[in-house]
Length: 281
Image (cartoon, rainbow, N blue to C red; front, side, top):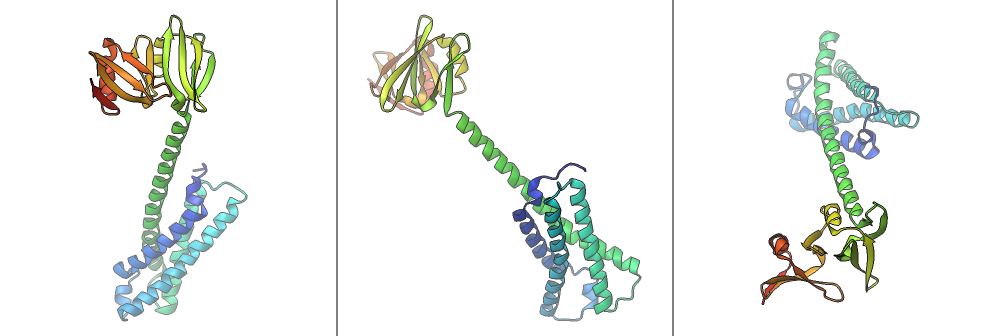
């Protein structure tokens, strides 16, 4: 209870939304349910009752408005805890119920015992306030979780824009945009990274194995297609069969043609058949 309550409960925007929603809910609730014995005590027309209930609701919400102003003032100097927020809502219910009991005594001269009137007033006031408070709180939590998920997805997307290539000792040798990398080519104990930058084709040589890069890049858009080649599937322009051999035509400046070995042909065909143009010769 001594922990800080989530900030979305005490933000100005959400507080205004909660007060407005509670006001509308209270007005509809009173006119439909007619609490506080209004069904038997008031012999007035529907429109008169509606006007009177509107004034009553606005008067009651004034208590909530003052309570929230006090919360914002306290928020400037200390953290709003769960305990404080709970006591604040309880205080709103008690003060609003007391105000309604006073109005009952003043306006309709209700002579029932005070304990009876305050009990009924607390019961009805709690229903009027807690239901919209609960609904709005669930909405705020859902909205906050949605924003958190969207933020996380955005962070993951931004993180995936770049990729680091390491040598056999684990030292980062170069970091490139994934969209710039066209394919990787291995020779003995070295891997050549073919990429484009500023409209030009470039290469970077790293001492490492293609097998190790295959494991490190499996979560990205790279696909092993040959003992010596791994391609960025986002740069595969066309897949075609030439004399029984599957070939990948890349969309780089040189329009590089890469042969797919039999070992990887099934996997490559499955991965690319729905994303690139297939041409049979």
